[in-house]
Structure formats: structure tokens, C-alpha cells
Length: 264
Image (cartoon, rainbow, N blue to C red; front, side):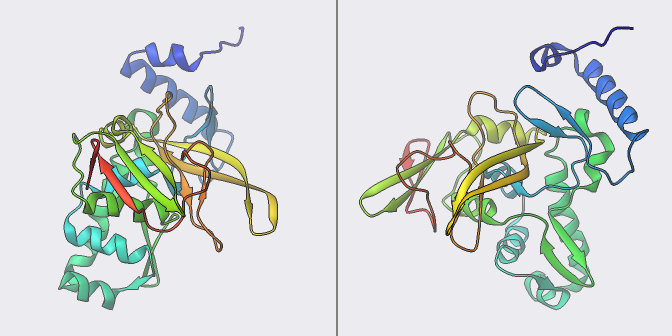
């Protein structure tokens, strides 16, 4: 029997039911040849899509916004503090007012991320995903914090889905560097269409000019304009190429935030 190749464009034309059946077939095929903890991947036109989403390194800024915007103020506060340091149960009790609320709060934050992933693609594998991990009573983020920090500042400015695209400006001297965040991607992720994609780029950290980053990123499949991806390093922020416009890599807190064309 000949091999059949389905392009990404052809795959997108299929009905939801057929897509689900194909992915289940792929998952079963992979599972027969790999252990349950292995990372399973399928190649699309431009990326490798991770079929085992439990292991990821960073959220795109669009994903971070879609996750945080649906959380309560207390839950966002927990995430905001975890961006800076780990928390123990005593810390969380002080924040939430009761130790009995800890498991429910952490669970709701993790479910908020889980529900953003594409159920037709990942199925029950989504349940493995955790934004906040706990080990020995110590709670920490499972991924890089930088996108969550930027997303929180955008939400603090009053952003709500439906307000339009976002422009975040960083000033280095007199030259502004801009990050354009498309609301279309946020809407797609918020509706449960996020994917885990493999991103790689070369960059320079300190004196190492040929360092390469290879990361699994939770983001939208926004084929026209890629999601914005940033990670924090010991030296400064590192952005995926084409995540910003300007002569300099942005770093530090945004200087200005524009939502729907208006400065907030």
C-alpha cells in the first residue's frame, strides 16, 4: 500500500471529526513504539507539533494573555508572585486567606491553561499540562516567566478581548522598539486552539554569539503572523526573530502600551 502524505493545508480542510480520528490514529501508532513519557511529534509545514504537551518551555505572550485574562484577581496575584520566586503553603495561605483554598486555586489556574490547548489534537493528553508545579510543598512555574510578566502589565492596563490589537513599546535611548500583538491570535488561543510548537533561533548572550535556543512554545497556529516569543536569561531578554520591530532587542518593563490604537 503506498504512503499517503497530507499537507497542512489539506488537513485544515478536513472536518473536525476526521481530524480527531487521524490524530488518534497517529497517537496510537506513536504509542506502540514509544514509552508513555516520550515526547511525540508530528511535522507540519513550518513547525513540529508536540503531541505530548506536558513538557513545554514557554508561553507566547498571546497565550499568556489568554490564560491570565480568565483568572480571578487572586489567581493572577499568585502567578505574578511566582514569576519572581517560589511559594510554599504558608505563603499561599497568606495570599488566599485560607490553606483550604490552595488546591482549588492552583487547580483552577492549571485548568485555565489546559483548556486553551486544542482538544481535537491532544485529547486527554492535555490533562498532563501544568502551569504551576508542586514538589514537597513548594510551588513554582513550570515555564519561563517573561511572557506572563508582560501579559500581566497589558491586562493591568485594562485590556479585554475585543479591544483590538496591542502594541507594546520599549525605549532604548530615543529609539522605540515595538512588539505588535495581534488580537486574532489571542482569540484563537482563548477559544481552545493553542498548539505546542517547536521554535528555534540563534542569538547572542554575553560573549556567546552563536548560541541556539530550541524551545517548545504554547502558542496559536497563526500562520500569517507568528506569536511573540520571549525568554529571560541571566543577561537580558531574548526574543525570537521577528517578534519585534526596531533596531534593538527590547528588555525591561514596557515604556508604553497601546490597546486598539489608544495609549493606556
